[in-house]
Image: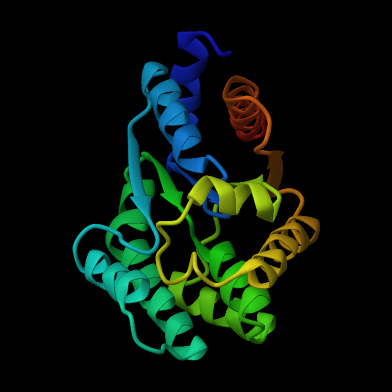
Length: 221
């Protein structure tokens, strides 16, 4: 842990804020870990902004309702573009502005969700989704991405019977999603860190904080 004067120095050198993203299957516990990290960061004096995909404040909330609650047939390509539209809104209206003003932005899901769910899960062209993600974000990349890995059986048991449209996709779909996340981590090991989310809440939180501190130390060098 850094003492206050080191954090002050860090704030001077960090002209822009940071962008952290949390990923994983539903039921992986990322919401709990997001809240714990926010508490930790605020206690250290950081300004923190929380957003989510889909469902960033404003227009994104309407897109989220379409994606998760619509009970008719949805084209996989249409689904992918709705996520991308929400992402563009999130980055342009919330993420980029707050980073430029020196805040830490945490997003509950981001580009890697599209790669894992629509690319690997729906079996769309991963390279094309990667290209479209780049367009939607204008090339903005997270500074650090946490992937909370969980086996599909445990994930589905935690979600329970009350599932939205995507949560109801079935075991084969979520096996592909999990493998997709692990493949993403292999391709970008410097940005993407995998955490075993079947561990205790306390142990997971410690890993989350340790990875954040590592990022701080890199930026101070």
